[in-house]
Image (tube, rainbow, N blue to C red; front, side, top):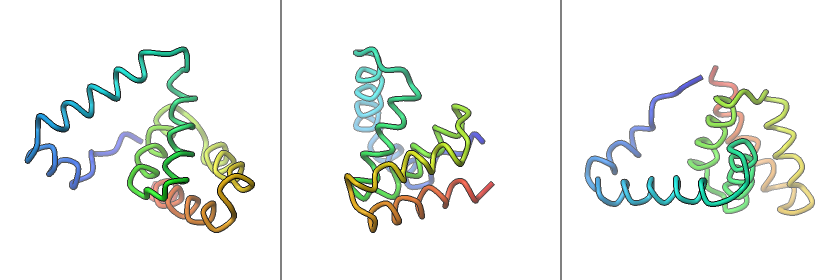
Length: 105
């Protein structure tokens, strides 16, 4: 399901290459500093993205989870597990954003 990088991200990267390079380097550093594997890290970042109501980040982490081989049911279940923590309305919004990606295939 490898998708093209979103146009907005490409535009900002072209306008501010040093900034995006620093953000990308930070991301790699954070991934490599601890014992969590890529799958768990992506699920954690998906949950955080939904909790802070970031549609774009939710799309990104959903894409990455699909690329790692997770099924739509597994991804949706991870979102539903957030219900007691972030509340039903936020979970519904998160599922909507996740489905934007899962149903585009």
